[in-house]
Amino acid sequence: MDQSNKCIICQGKGRRACPALEGQICPSCCGAKRGSDVQCTSECPHFPFGINGYDAWLKIDGSLIQKTTVFMASYCDRYKFEETIQKMSLGDSPQEQDLEVTAGAAVYYLLFVERDGQGETLADKWAAQKWEGLNNDERVMMNYRCHSRGTIIEIQKILDHQAMECIDLFDQKRGKFILYDRKTAGRISRFTKLFTWLTHYSHFSRAEHGGVEISEFISKEFEEIAVREAEREIKKRQGFTFKDYLSENFGSLCRLTREIAEEKRKATLNTMDFHQCRAMYDMKGGRHEIEAILEEYPEFERDDEQLKEEDPPGTQYYVWLREGKSKAIEKEMPLVFQHKGDPEKEGVGVLGNIVLYSDHMNVEAFTKQKFAFAKKMMEQYFSGLVSFKKEMIVDVAKQLAEGPREKKKLEEVEPMSPEIEKELMSKSYKNHYIKFLDDKIPALENATPREASKDEELRPKLIELMKGHIGSVEKQNKVKSLNIDIDWVLDELGLVELK
Image 1 (cartoon, one colour):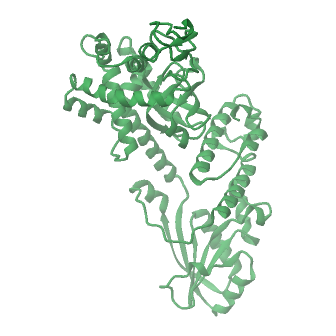
Image 2 (cartoon, rainbow, N blue to C red; image 1 turned 135 degrees about the vertical axis):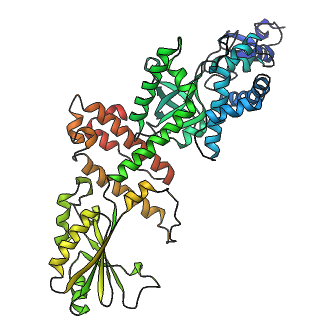
Image 3 (cartoon, one colour; image 1 turned 180 degrees about the vertical axis):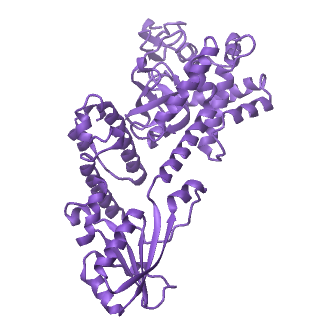
């Protein structure tokens, strides 16, 4: 036999090249020793833990689930597992993705985190039995998973259909690493933060069982609470680490993210000017005089599409635009809501609606600010022609904050063509960010983004703020198949590190 074709380990017939041993190897020796006795290279196509072996890795992962279940059943009865499932529950959610995260967290907690009176985990016991029932690849996988812990990762880049460049927010020394997960790569956007169980394998990492997204809306509060509570436990328990705390309390911390989000949602709504306002005016003179004014001024635009079958004969609807004299309200509004440019390009803001009946007219607006302005302008436009009768103001924001968020059936409308929607969305985003660059932002201590980009203390806050914007835009791109690009905003602000 040609010596060059012999297996470098058993001297049998070598059938594949082994880059690590720089020779031929037989399939049997390869399968029995890769990743354990043989330190395989990242590029080897036969190494399940290399960059080219992910499909093989997925098969091993599938086979290991059943064997792990059998092993755990010998130590954990049904009640123990159900108790742990409850501990790791994300809340009252029947969603399949949440159930997958919950079940995975329960298994990992019981295997790798919970310890008995002798300080051993179930994985320690299985390892002491030399991973009985597992083949070489499965043993290698379990050895890596023993170090799996809960943490928060941030997606830095989407590299391809399965790979993402990430950082661990609680392990900055590690630096950037490559995460493999096809489902996550297909739906996630840059700078998304994910609370998950993280396992580092030899050449890539995995966010096991998916995880829970931590939005920028709550990330600061969540991290502060988690760190504070973890520090208390670390002082009480010798050898207990921050990531042990995140793992042990994975379920309650996931529920905490939802509680914080709900509390912040309520707080935001309680301070929001979102009111359903309606004022009724009686007509003093003829209706034709009021109609003439509504037709004369460009700020009143006839809208017959709002007509309903139950409307009395002769009812007319008008959209009250922020044009002409009514544009004055924009001076009191945030810059991002102002329309100073060409109406054909920027569009025109809306003040409210007018409904004209046979003997009276209603004025509607959805903020108290707009409503007060509209009533003042009614005196200018219709002085002597109408008299105020009564008004109704409903605090919609308060209702939303106090009541359950029920999904309401939307009226059926003719869908907008994808081409028109994409064009309008593109213009809307561009106009928004043109104004955003010079608007005072509370999160930047009321500095503008341009000012913050040049301020040494504010620049880190601007970077975090823009991460959220980038993630939101990219999520919209994926959900609605858009192609919104705000790299030009990053160029304007000199934030090359985010490109």
